[in-house]
Length: 66
Image 1 (cartoon, helix red, strand yellow):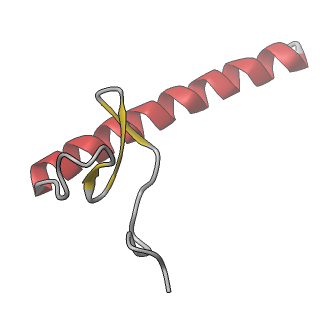
Image 2 (cartoon, rainbow, N blue to C red; image 1 turned 30 degrees about the vertical axis):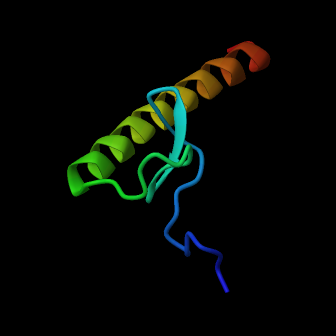
């Protein structure tokens, strides 16, 4: 059993200041996102991850004194 979201849920994806999964907003207003909304949400999430990685790389350089 994988829970009500199944194995394809993306928990913790930021979108407009709220947390969403692949089924829509966790606040209960909408249950399903359109294909366009899912793509947009995942692209925003990807950009956020890239920014996080850049910050990690900068921090590692500082700590290593490079």
